[in-house]
Length: 241
Image 1 (cartoon, one colour):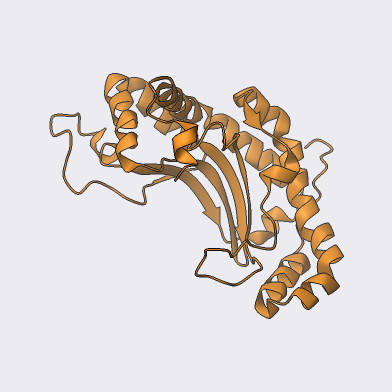
Image 2 (spheres, rainbow, N blue to C red):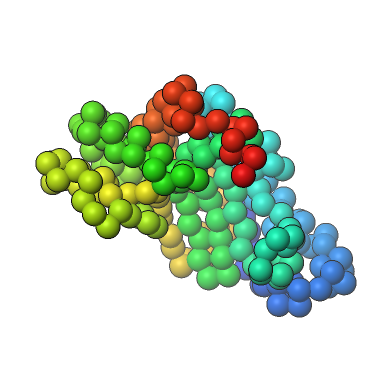
C-alpha cells in the first residue's frame, strides 16, 4: 500500500453526517461545517486525487478535478419534491465532462450510513439510444463476454434498472440475451462493512477493481463515441431539455 492522501472516513464523521441530515438545519450545519469538511468532504476529495492517475490512464478525457468529482453535502432542492437540504450519503463520479459528453459511462464510489459501494455505470437519457449497446454486443459478442468476465473478476454484479419487456433479439445467442433487453446497465459492488472505508487500503481496493473492469469501460466508451460521431447524442439538445 502506497502513501496515499486518503487516510479513511471515520465512523464518527458518518454519524455526524447523519445527524446533520436529521436536523436538516442551516444552523446545525454551520456549527459543524468544519468538522464535516475535515471528516467527509476532504477525505472524499482525497480518494478522487489518489485515483486520478489510474483514471487518466483509463480515459485521458476524464474530468478529474477532486472538487467537481465529489458531491456536496448540501443539496439543491429547487424543482425537487424532496426538500431535505442535507445528505446522509456521499458519492463521486469519474467521467468525462457532463456538458460536453452527456450520458457518458462513469465509474463511481459512494457510501451510506450502513454501507458503501462502487462500480461502473452506463445510463442514457433516451432508453432507445441503448440499442446501440445491443448492436455492439451482437457485433462483438466475444469482446462483450470478455468484458463481462472482467467485471466479474473485479467483484462486480450486473444490474439493470429498466428492461424491455419484449425480447428484441430472439435469434441472439442465449448467453447474450440477458443483456439485450437492457435500457441501462451497471456493474456494481456493495458491502455493509464500513470499517473498510476507514483505511487507506480502500484506495488499493478501488484501483484494483476499476482497473480490472477497464475492458467494460472501453466497450461502453466505444459505444458512446459512436453515438456522438453519428449525431445521436448532441450536447446542445441534451441541455435544452
